[in-house]
Amino acid sequence: MAVWQASFHIVPHERVAELFPGWFEPPLDPDYVATLPTEDPSELDWWSSRHPPADFRANLDRLAPRLSSWSSQLQLWGSEDGDRVDVFLEGGRVESI
Image 1: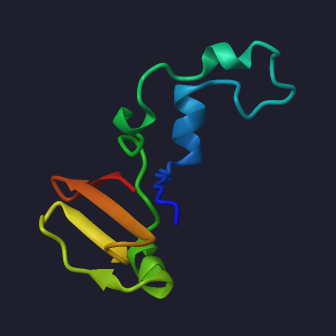
Image 2 (image 1 turned 90 degrees about the vertical axis):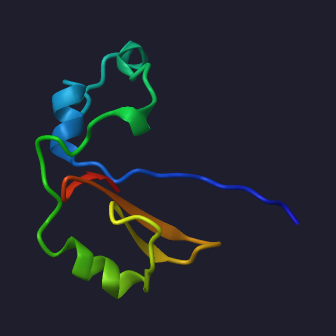
């Protein structure tokens, strides 16, 4: 049995376009790879200028059960040892999904 883990981040399209101009404007420049971020994408402040939709928690409730969290700044949906969505908050504002 193989053990593996992958992480994906949900980020606002507008913020990607803001941080990386030209990514969504075809045709892509052949040198677009040079525009890829050199920093860890999980360290970028994706939600600084955008909010997720007001009903995003209700949508996650329909997708998976809520889990209890060990921190007031972390909301969890899914399974502790399986597929899970983590929503990190900073001052009540979404910092990452």
